[in-house]
Length: 400
Image 1: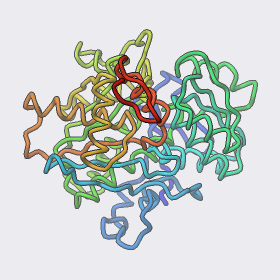
Image 2: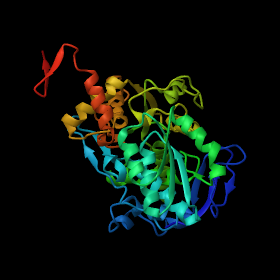
Image 3: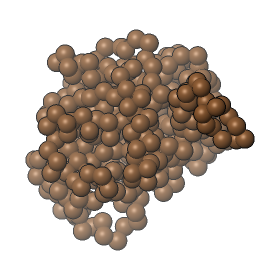
Image 4: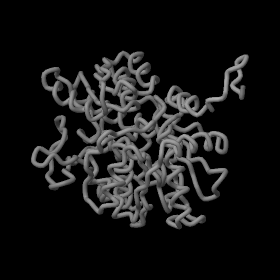
């Protein structure tokens, strides 16, 4: 595994040591990136080094922190060819431990927390990050303190409680949960693992970029469509592409990075359309895709910069479009996606229709989690669509 050279602020460029736990840049509150000595590393770490390694994200250990991994087998998820669109692939993250891509980030973050000797970890979450923290904390023998909106999908709450986490349900949004963690962390002795408030969740998420390149034989696709709440997956993949270029594995070409958000909570889309470099807080955020209900992403300035550098764009999807796409993917592709993941299909269809993507362009749609995590949400949406003149007769829903 790689020794960390330093941590670098993504705003002012200041360097910090990784010998002790760090959060954000004390000078300007910028997000910190982990930096390695890639020039030295590329002499011994090449694509063929991966041939005999286990099919987990830790196959890329050379570009991950040099600590004992707390692993549950996360990563190296399938890249499924679409049956509907010949040049489209679905990167299905639903097979990860705890059923979402959040397992990647929590694996690295909890591994580092344990190496630092931390014992109490806390995070606000819209759902899946909470499940992942609870699981990896249990595996590491650490305390997990989790704050989630009270209307979080039931599976997330049940998972967290079953893993032994201390769960607080909040009458509000993830932003309210984050405020509560910030207010209590010093008094309670918690280390805050909030999205992008520490450097190592990005390191786990970046392995999606390494995997995408490897699964395409080191030739990147034309586009990547990514459901964006906090945006760490998109940020991490972009970091991975830069690292791979520095290692000599790929050239300067990059995919067009596409951010998709729900119409009821689209701060990144609004900022993109207005040509802004940062987003504004989205009032009264509302969507059935819990992971997209993030009123303001801490890493918004990085997300918007990536969209610009990649000649990408940002797209919205209504809840109805999302649920229709979820059902369509299940029946057409055999993929039971999370609502957030289904939003990527909505975005692709829209971009194909306006000519942003050509039919021959290779595009990867990220399904960030399993629909099994959202059974109550999906069932509730379906029941709300039953015509009022229908009745339940002998266990069968049908016209009266």
